[in-house]
Image (cartoon, rainbow, N blue to C red; front, side, top):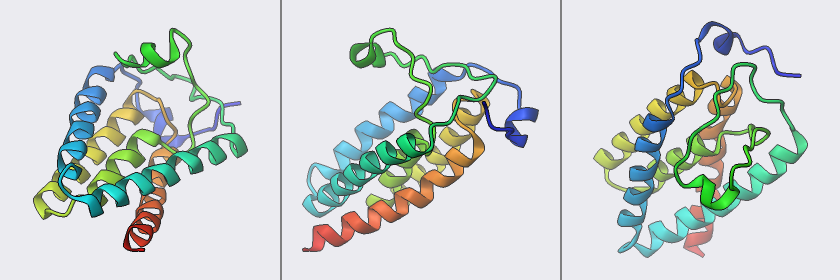
Length: 159
């Protein structure tokens, strides 16, 4: 049974997949560009991302949410390579898209780059809610998880 999410109840659902991936893929390329010459940033990001993926496996298993009522499935141009035509709808808590971008924002060192990544994260989070891909709690929780995993990754990268 879907959660009664007050924000999604008042927010009409629209397909904004194109905009989501126009933010997500360049941001992914950006992080790889930034970490290529900075081993400390690279190690921090990789450990943070590993922790994030492991935590998502745990939270998705322990909190198997039904998708929002008006969900419009993301049309990812590259997911067909990995998933075929099978649509995944139970990978909700917490938002991996939002958490990934926020993690990038935490890892980059330049203040301007941080502002850009945090702004991109905010726009992406709003777009995910407009498409009803995640519940509000999934999107709000993501930065908190990212901060925890960034802290762990930073700690390990110093060892």
